Length: 73
Length: 212
Image 1 (cartoon, each protein chain N blue to C red):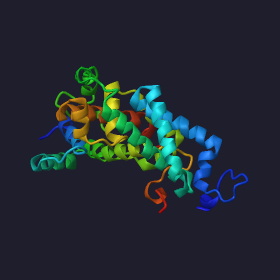
Image 2: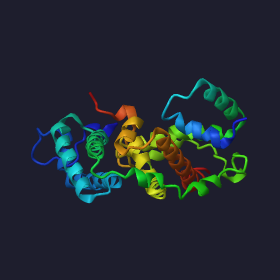
Image 3: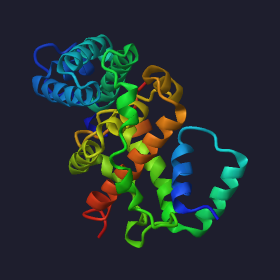
Image 4: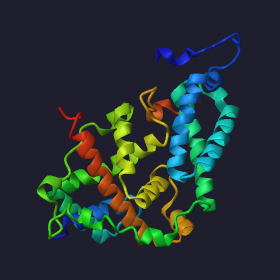
């Protein structure tokens, strides 16, 4: 079975490229059994969302709130 | 909701639209500049280049400021322009990390290996926890300070690649071409950056105040 080190690498790579069918299947199986990697996977998306917010100048001053607060036209 | 149509400091020009008035509000403008400069300097590592990018972005923003009546919307727009300016500078490669230095960035490999046991499974106390409502944090100033601290705790090159990818949103292949590094090299660096960043955020934020 795939270990956590391999699984987390794939979870990060999934942000960059399409994983092969084989990798996806092995990963799915691993993540089903491993809560740590399951959390890690979710955090990859969160990290990306956080970074995008940061790059929008988000802060408490009328924090940038994504879609409802975009250009208003 | 209610603040939507309340321009902040509206002097004797009632016809002036609210978006423009944000950019003429000295306090807002000053804070915005500081924040933009910090953002640009982080990625360009050069104060003069950062100044130029910020200046150009602000001038560009002024032209369109009329279409915004909320500060946050204006800010999003200004940062979008700034991101484009930074991307241009990065693409021109005037401040590029030499590939050779990137490849030498192995100092933290051992550190990261310590996250896993000898078979490559999580060490019990390193196993990622669930983050509850992580996106609530983006409205918290303290969170951003923690985020910045974690970012600057990364090895320099990892931080820069992460920023190119996730802040400036350059495509992987674009980064590789500009820096002349292989895709697998880029992916490994991004992987390490993410491993570290999530660990830092979990230890210093999500496991701390956030969780009760």
